[in-house]
Length: 359
Image (cartoon, rainbow, N blue to C red; front, side, top):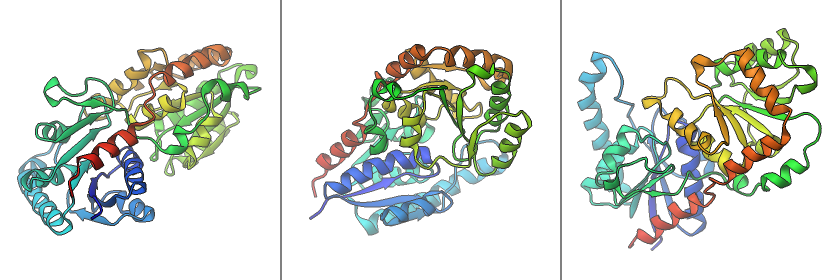
């Protein structure tokens, strides 16, 4: 009888891609995978393409302001819990792995009620409310960053699972030795883009001396692509601007320096790839967890942290100018990032799940 794991993850790439890395490893080892997500999440478009059967719940987030949302929360949770219970009863997984997204809460609670082993993996430095609750009774808790949970959770720090093509990149010394000419700057705004970065970075580049200006690849987000292209044209700055960066491993291999938000997966990918960064945390993230994520790299001098309210073209130009004039510093930052890498996170989480199963 083949082992059967239900993977619960969805909503954003920050949950889905680490979960896919674990699921792919378990599938290669002969494990059957079923996916649990929400009907409104991007998992509906993404997961079937990877060949995994997808079950969905009619569930949305209950955290936030508004009287209507607070009043509806008990009914929303109860309905989702009942749906999750029915899915688990029908599919009968040997173990449930929660990796974030709206379906993880009701799915984890249903697993508890049915006495199905529950494993969770928290991607952020500050755990979300759902994982703080599930950690109280989960069979095993994994965390990406040290000391995210209290001692009572007995969490094991494994890093975030990242895609194998990023794990397989050459070490920074080998990559940087092949880079000649202007410094290569990679700008990542996430799949939706980041307007603050899209506006400020072209301005900063326009203020730099021509001899120090880097080569630029800028991922602007589909909805913000046109206005970002217009911004570069307005300021007469050359850049390769695209909506999405589909080949992340190739982009990291190309880059000398990255400017980006501080999502958990991005921070972990920077460490595994070995790249220095200028991090601008998303200011409206729940519990300001992106700032804590960023500090993981900042504390070892692998990154600079700029809060969005302090993001200014002139100051950013000065910082970029100093870095673009100092390849040695960029390599030092890359090596510092690489020192934090945990490239075997997917294997460690997947192996635990399979060893915990008694089919």
